[in-house]
Length: 164
Image 1 (cartoon, rainbow, N blue to C red):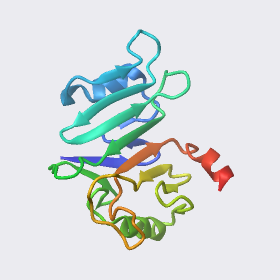
Image 2: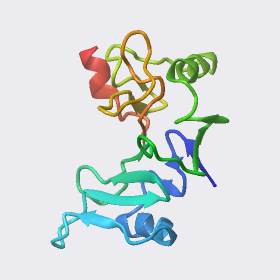
Image 3: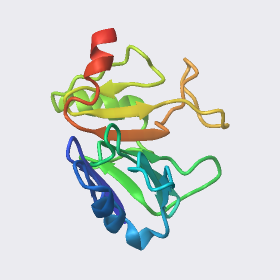
Image 4: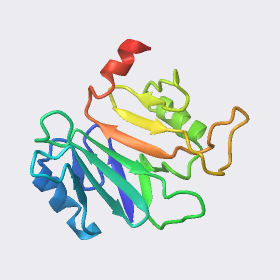
């Protein structure tokens, strides 16, 4: 199965702006999610997984709506039949440099000011290129592939833009 990223709108079945209940219903077939905090207060995070792909659903601020969805690579020595797809590219098996070059070819601006945490403002995609695991690396020491991708709302990275 493919989990399709459509920034800044959704990641797989989870759409930004969904209520916590709607987000839980969207991932119900994946298994029992963990909701934090678990004490009845408005949730801030929903942790789940689609097969080996870990998924963090963020409900920042009031906890009334999904503000971002982050998906994580399965990890060293693990494989999955699930592809996380951005405009035809498998995010976790396409070399990061190719992924970012293709993003720029689409007219997106890739901010590489922090090479371990690049992001695409406006489209609101953020990536992690950091891991302690034994993985193929570039000559600069970065993992060859991204280890996570976050889909946020259109202005999700505005604060980071101010600091670059």
